[in-house]
Length: 116
Image 1 (cartoon, rainbow, N blue to C red):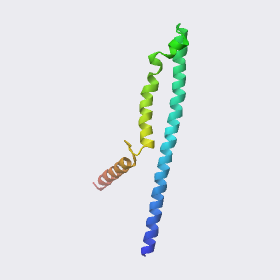
Image 2 (cartoon, rainbow, N blue to C red):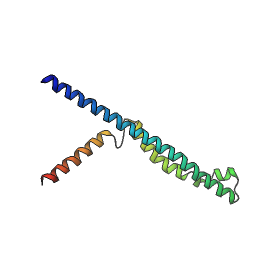
Image 3 (tube, rainbow, N blue to C red):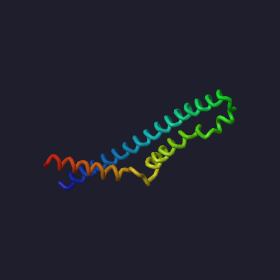
Image 4 (cartoon, rainbow, N blue to C red):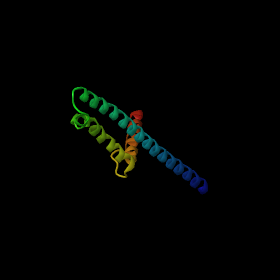
């Protein structure tokens, strides 16, 4: 009986570890997609800004040094940095502990509402 209990607990912890690894891979994949979109969109927007500036009479060097060329890079880059910290660092703002607490909170609220 005790051996069956240990085996069941081992299976449960293995499944939990697998789900945690799966969640981490999903976070990593999401970050890389976000990074690819960030680079693509910012290159297109910056290219258009530079092109339009050059049509307005600026040289390529002047158009490249315009401050508004990099505004989107900086603002969006800040949010990408936050995501990178969450994905790659052990110090995360919305990490797995936060997720577990929130899941537990929502489950308890749902149970209370069903029992009322």
